Length: 157
Image (cartoon, rainbow, N blue to C red; front, side, top):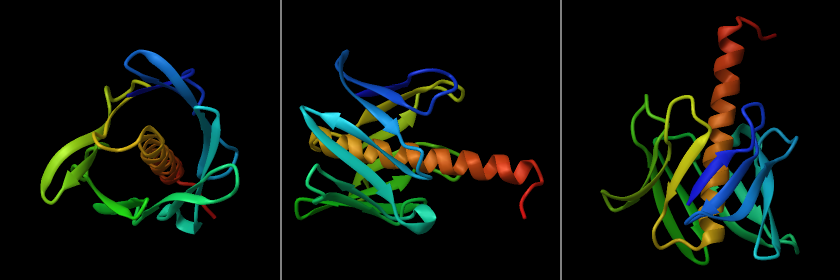
Protein backbone atom coordinates (compact mmCIF):
# COMPACT_ATOMS: atom_id res chain seq x y z
CA UNK A 1 0.00 0.00 0.00
CA UNK A 2 1.17 3.52 -0.68
CA UNK A 3 -0.14 6.90 0.47
CA UNK A 4 0.67 10.06 -1.47
CA UNK A 5 -0.13 13.64 -0.45
CA UNK A 6 -2.79 15.18 -2.66
CA UNK A 7 -0.68 18.37 -2.84
CA UNK A 8 2.36 19.89 -1.18
CA UNK A 9 0.12 22.10 0.98
CA UNK A 10 -2.46 19.49 1.90
CA UNK A 11 -2.42 16.95 4.71
CA UNK A 12 -4.79 14.63 2.81
CA UNK A 13 -3.45 11.48 1.16
CA UNK A 14 -4.61 9.30 -1.72
CA UNK A 15 -4.05 5.65 -0.82
CA UNK A 16 -3.34 3.03 -3.46
CA UNK A 17 -2.94 -0.72 -3.24
CA UNK A 18 -0.90 -2.27 -6.04
CA UNK A 19 -1.43 0.89 -8.10
CA UNK A 20 -5.23 0.97 -7.64
CA UNK A 21 -6.74 3.86 -5.69
CA UNK A 22 -8.67 2.50 -2.71
CA UNK A 23 -9.40 5.58 -0.57
CA UNK A 24 -8.41 9.06 0.51
CA UNK A 25 -7.28 9.83 4.06
CA UNK A 26 -9.14 13.05 4.76
CA UNK A 27 -7.48 14.79 7.68
CA UNK A 28 -10.14 16.62 9.54
CA UNK A 29 -9.99 20.07 10.95
CA UNK A 30 -9.77 18.32 14.31
CA UNK A 31 -6.39 18.46 15.96
CA UNK A 32 -5.71 14.75 15.35
CA UNK A 33 -7.88 12.54 13.26
CA UNK A 34 -9.85 12.30 10.09
CA UNK A 35 -11.76 9.78 8.05
CA UNK A 36 -11.65 7.46 5.08
CA UNK A 37 -14.14 5.36 3.15
CA UNK A 38 -13.21 1.80 2.23
CA UNK A 39 -15.46 -0.45 0.15
CA UNK A 40 -18.46 1.78 0.84
CA UNK A 41 -17.93 1.94 4.63
CA UNK A 42 -16.89 5.18 6.31
CA UNK A 43 -14.43 5.06 9.21
CA UNK A 44 -13.53 7.94 11.53
CA UNK A 45 -10.27 8.12 13.43
CA UNK A 46 -10.02 10.32 16.53
CA UNK A 47 -7.36 11.03 19.09
CA UNK A 48 -7.89 11.29 22.81
CA UNK A 49 -6.26 14.15 24.68
CA UNK A 50 -2.45 14.34 24.23
CA UNK A 51 -2.60 12.18 21.09
CA UNK A 52 -1.34 8.98 22.72
CA UNK A 53 -4.60 7.03 22.24
CA UNK A 54 -6.59 6.75 19.03
CA UNK A 55 -9.83 5.00 18.14
CA UNK A 56 -11.46 4.11 14.84
CA UNK A 57 -15.24 3.90 14.64
CA UNK A 58 -17.47 2.78 11.79
CA UNK A 59 -20.72 4.32 10.51
CA UNK A 60 -22.63 3.10 13.56
CA UNK A 61 -20.06 4.63 15.98
CA UNK A 62 -18.85 1.15 16.98
CA UNK A 63 -15.16 1.10 17.95
CA UNK A 64 -13.41 -1.10 15.38
CA UNK A 65 -9.80 -0.55 16.50
CA UNK A 66 -7.76 1.37 19.03
CA UNK A 67 -4.12 2.38 19.39
CA UNK A 68 -2.39 2.91 22.74
CA UNK A 69 0.87 4.64 23.74
CA UNK A 70 1.23 6.30 20.32
CA UNK A 71 4.35 8.47 20.27
CA UNK A 72 6.25 6.14 22.59
CA UNK A 73 9.02 3.83 21.41
CA UNK A 74 6.67 0.82 21.74
CA UNK A 75 2.94 1.11 21.04
CA UNK A 76 0.04 -1.20 20.25
CA UNK A 77 -3.04 -1.51 18.08
CA UNK A 78 -5.99 -3.65 19.15
CA UNK A 79 -8.75 -4.92 16.86
CA UNK A 80 -10.93 -8.02 16.70
CA UNK A 81 -9.54 -9.42 19.95
CA UNK A 82 -5.93 -9.21 18.70
CA UNK A 83 -3.12 -6.91 19.77
CA UNK A 84 -0.46 -5.83 17.28
CA UNK A 85 2.88 -4.38 18.34
CA UNK A 86 4.73 -1.47 16.79
CA UNK A 87 7.96 0.33 17.59
CA UNK A 88 9.65 3.49 16.39
CA UNK A 89 12.77 2.40 14.50
CA UNK A 90 14.93 5.03 16.21
CA UNK A 91 14.64 8.41 17.85
CA UNK A 92 15.83 10.10 14.62
CA UNK A 93 13.75 8.02 12.23
CA UNK A 94 10.12 8.58 11.32
CA UNK A 95 9.82 4.89 10.41
CA UNK A 96 7.43 2.80 12.50
CA UNK A 97 8.03 -0.95 12.51
CA UNK A 98 5.38 -3.66 12.80
CA UNK A 99 6.86 -6.40 15.02
CA UNK A 100 6.10 -9.93 16.15
CA UNK A 101 8.14 -10.54 19.28
CA UNK A 102 11.43 -8.86 18.44
CA UNK A 103 11.18 -9.50 14.71
CA UNK A 104 10.31 -6.75 12.26
CA UNK A 105 7.62 -8.01 9.88
CA UNK A 106 6.56 -4.72 8.27
CA UNK A 107 6.69 -0.95 8.49
CA UNK A 108 5.27 2.45 7.65
CA UNK A 109 7.86 4.87 6.36
CA UNK A 110 8.31 8.01 4.33
CA UNK A 111 10.00 7.18 1.05
CA UNK A 112 12.01 10.41 1.21
CA UNK A 113 12.64 13.11 3.79
CA UNK A 114 10.77 15.84 1.90
CA UNK A 115 8.47 13.68 -0.15
CA UNK A 116 4.79 13.32 0.46
CA UNK A 117 4.79 9.57 -0.15
CA UNK A 118 4.46 6.93 2.55
CA UNK A 119 5.02 3.21 2.05
CA UNK A 120 2.75 0.91 4.07
CA UNK A 121 3.83 -2.71 4.47
CA UNK A 122 1.73 -4.41 7.16
CA UNK A 123 1.33 -8.07 6.18
CA UNK A 124 -1.49 -9.98 7.82
CA UNK A 125 -3.56 -6.91 8.69
CA UNK A 126 -6.89 -6.23 7.00
CA UNK A 127 -6.97 -3.22 4.65
CA UNK A 128 -9.12 -1.23 7.12
CA UNK A 129 -6.66 -1.97 9.93
CA UNK A 130 -3.70 -1.00 7.73
CA UNK A 131 -5.47 2.28 6.98
CA UNK A 132 -6.10 2.88 10.69
CA UNK A 133 -2.41 2.36 11.48
CA UNK A 134 -1.50 4.67 8.58
CA UNK A 135 -3.92 7.33 9.89
CA UNK A 136 -2.45 7.08 13.40
CA UNK A 137 1.12 7.40 12.11
CA UNK A 138 0.27 10.32 9.80
CA UNK A 139 -1.49 12.09 12.69
CA UNK A 140 1.51 11.48 14.95
CA UNK A 141 3.89 12.88 12.33
CA UNK A 142 1.64 15.94 11.86
CA UNK A 143 1.58 16.56 15.63
CA UNK A 144 5.39 16.18 15.85
CA UNK A 145 5.88 18.60 12.94
CA UNK A 146 3.51 21.14 14.53
CA UNK A 147 5.31 20.84 17.88
CA UNK A 148 8.70 21.28 16.20
CA UNK A 149 7.47 24.33 14.29
CA UNK A 150 6.05 25.87 17.47
CA UNK A 151 9.25 25.32 19.43
CA UNK A 152 11.51 26.61 16.66
CA UNK A 153 9.49 29.80 16.32
CA UNK A 154 10.18 30.52 19.96
CA UNK A 155 6.48 31.08 20.34
CA UNK A 156 4.21 29.69 22.93
CA UNK A 157 2.28 31.28 25.63
